[in-house]
Image 1 (spheres, helix red, strand yellow):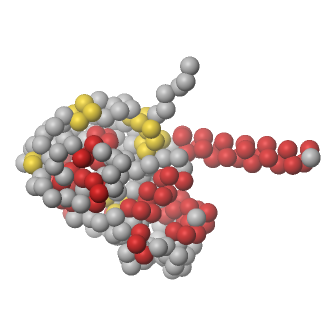
Image 2 (cartoon, rainbow, N blue to C red; image 1 turned 45 degrees about the vertical axis):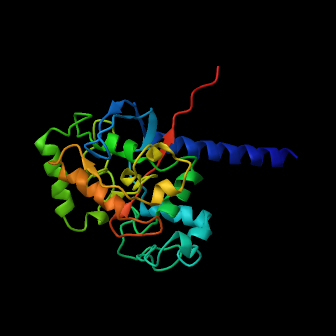
Image 3 (cartoon, helix red, strand yellow; image 1 turned 180 degrees about the horizontal axis):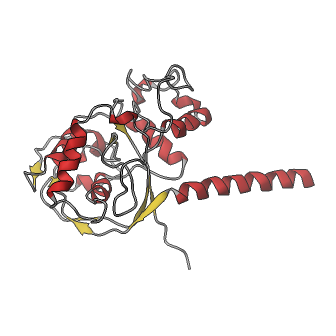
Length: 260
């Protein structure tokens, strides 16, 4: 009996350490109100406080997820949840191709798979508004969108080849302490193309139809922000089962209010 209790204690300690390690790799994002540079109708968006992974999910982290969740391996994944490109750069269910850098961001992952990964860690994918809010920061300023240098750097990355193979964390961190929002891969968001939807449905996170379909034209709030235009245009062209070579993800977590 004593041995069983001790074993349970060790398991509990290991889980706590694992979760603490995850928390250490997250940045606290203080929410605010802002107008997206490229959005549906120039509506002011309010973002609540939340935590964001400071790095995109890596190949080696996703590999561990597959070992613990074999239903998401390339041979077992339900075809409804991933197209034929899913993990196409892996030589088998649990091993990426030899040439792949394990510390580079995972790619060829569908929205469904990315969502499942985050949920396994008691996290979720960021909303478009949350992602854009954090991504509008440069190294020193939390809203750097009016700086020509900010947009120039992003556009230069969009033109650079094979950045998806680079190691995470090698680009400068932004003012929130988050790395690689620009510079390695595009990233999935929870409501990735809901910006194309009219009305208030963008705010309704419970209706799956809001996540995958779009019908209205996008209205630019800053026609000079081509980088933002490219992001929204890319999101609008996606379907949840798509897996692409330049598309990865990271997770966020709600900040739970302490109960008194």
